Amino acid sequence: MKIPILFLSAAIALAACNSGKTNALLQHKKWKVYDVTVPAGSSYNHVQASQAKDLKDGYYSDAYYQFLDNDLFIATIGGVPDSGKYSLLSNGKIISVTGANGSRGSEHLVEVVKLTDTEFDMKVTTGEYYFVLHTRKQ
Image (cartoon, rainbow, N blue to C red; front, side):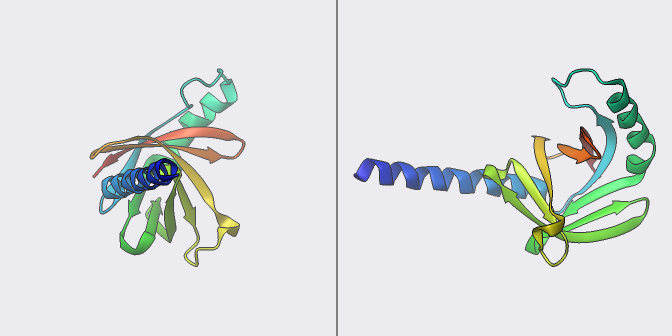
């Protein structure tokens, strides 16, 4: 009986460490989008590939993301900031972004594809397709 409880305690501690590491790498940086691609392993879809290029050259051409204290999230698109709340799920592999009031009615889930001190790639849904937003620390 002691082994499962000990194992569960270790798993919870490890999960908290992973979320903490993700949060430490995300926070207090300005992440600028520099590329938009189709996720690796996706079958080729001409429409999706074309939309990725259009999004890179258009909507995401001047996009920044910031993760701050107290779970504050700021997205600046085309010079217009918008704020909300964020929380880390699945050991820091998923980021839940909600409105400023924290309501999940407008929740967006973002998958962390790559995260280092200087690069952050995230898988997002735009319309009916998935895309990877490649960002760099500014």
